[in-house]
Length: 369
Length: 259
Ligand code: HEM
Image (cartoon, rainbow over all chains, first blue to last red; front, side, top):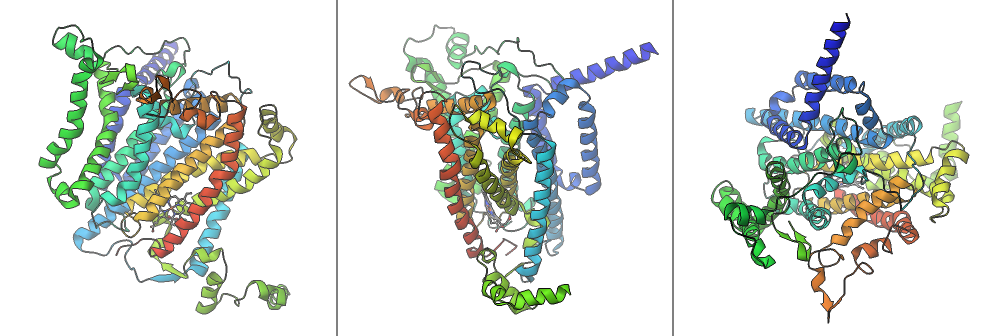
């Protein structure tokens, strides 16, 4: 009996260990990105109610089982983290709802049948049809919010003390995507330039997307590029990073697996590979040039090539039709925004593989990329 | 009995002076019910049937607006109890829990704020996935993005007010980034070049972070500044933009649908 128990605990431990490893930054991101594309490619299959319900049931089961683990439980049930669990569930559910309707619409369009949203002339009066649904929604939301407020106390920690810094010091959860960017970029990029570009990019979307189809109904087939790139930003680079920052970042902003104890003594990760070292010392076998501009020239050329040649190469290959359709200005804008967005995953991969610190590191001017 | 009483009220001069239309039973009076009420008048009289299906809009814009109203009401009530000074702030918040009857105000306000952030993202997601930002709704999408930024700023400024460890250090992490603003933060790229005769113009005592915190650290001035932004300035701007947002929904032809 004892030995059965012992062996089952050790299986459990090795499952937990496996999941802890799978949650390490590189695996976590690789698995998320893979799941993202598999979902998009197979959207007609995954969104079938039976398939989606099975997946949801499995995930729920896994989540509940995980709550038996102390370390997992402690972080998930922290009052300020509960909204994130709510967000995860609602994003997943509504993505399903949207893609389910897109799958149905896409199939109907292939068969030449009317869309789910068809019947533009079917008008109903706002009183009573809309006003009453609004009233019901209002009552339901009020009730839900009151229950939430009764069940969960708003957290209040010790009085503010400028001399005692908590470790980890986390930004509010909706900014954790930005804080996670700080791992890969200096604050001027992660905290100022990239957030600014996110806002500019969002505002620019309707002016760059000249595709007249898919206006006012759910579809994926007619807007594959637009939807994929928007969701990549929203799901992978925002929601996934928030989940990561909340549940898997602990003291010293170190990574901790979901079943791991938050050990405060683990030192912060060391970053010691600079691109200028790789180029001058490792590749050419020469000492670093004395002047910093000369020293950083290879990195500057690399980045310059990325932002200047990238759009040209894409224009000649994957984006040949798109760049013709939307014209020079829109295409340039689109490229700049997309290349900035992709800078994040690129820097992540460089960090995991080469432990790269800076591509361009003009520390003298605080100008590091 | 009850019916009679109801009729008596509806036929009185007072009722008639407030609601100028009859009981909304037929097309005309139902249209009048919307047209003659300043709040309901945000709506058109008739809407596309597919546009108000729950599976289409998820009601997320409406829920965001509802949560904004909850925040205003609970926020005003909280202002009765809260003083934005380093001496009082924390203990006022603590007192809310201990002394105020049915002390749910803080809970409602805090969870409502979290919920609003979630709801606005989901609203944006649905607008994107239905392609509702396409012409003629480009401008309203842009107004929406500004609303999104302001909603996040509202949450961010409110985060400091309890003046506990969580608040102070989250804002410290956040505002430290302003120090790195290119050309405007003391540790930002290119700032070192902005100088006159060797005297740097951008330093810790006048950079972007200083402007945000009204000081070089998260202290009493920052608390007051965040309080005013949180309770007065940003809500006013949001209200104006919401008026534009709702107005434009109607002017752009109502909730989107297949052309
Ligand atoms: C305080 C925040 C906001 C509130 C209260 C709000 C409210 C609403 C409401 C009530 C609607 C009617 C349809 C619906 O419920 O979906 C709507 C539509 C719309 N919203 Fe918002 N919104 C907000 C933020 C945003 C954001 C962040 C965006 C986009 C980035 C946005 C873009 C739009 C657009 C384009 C429409 C028209 C959609 C259509 O015609 O189908 N709004 N908004």
